[in-house]
Length: 260
Ligand code: HPA
Image (cartoon, rainbow, N blue to C red; front, side, top):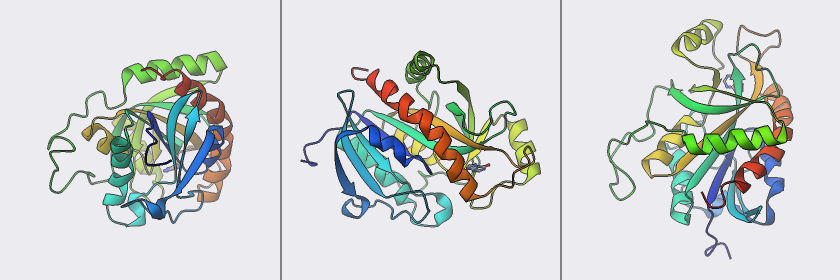
């Protein structure tokens, strides 16, 4: 039963990436409405359910749908799912997201392993009273994306011959996409991809001691770099292309961490 289920790995699936959950064996589904503090996703492409089961024998809980800062809901909706995973026994959080690329040679359909992030959203998800039983007041964000997990991810991608770019993810609040000038600024700051999620969940995860890995499915070249106007519809369509790679890569990656 779900009470006894103890995931080793938690996975947060981003916009249009729900198909990845089809890899879960013996799935049990829990609707977010049954889980305290979880968001009721409002964005098309986010289902709002946890899928528990195994992948290559590793117990996993996949979160299909996440809250975003731009939805304007309580900030606790960004914290609750990650802390629920930790409380359920998870040790590792894998995040996926849809993102725009600032690297001209890493275009739509490609995957990028996140090596670090820049939080440009203008807020920090841990602002407010700190619960010392969850984590420290001033958590370190050094090595926020676990180097050992990144190594495993690289190996899994190489074995499957899936090209995997690497880079720094810039977190943007949205809901408006960036201007071309903002993209130029993000490039100067060191961003390789930009999106509207992930940085807050990583912060919550590091605070409570989860190891984090994250993969962006590139859906477009960032504003000012490509010909196609940016839209959520186009993001979903191109996320589906990235999902085809992720459907193969994630199980192989998870299989490698059975004992890690
Ligand atoms: N910017 C921000 N978020 C995104 C983008 C983008 O270009 N593409 C997909 N999510």
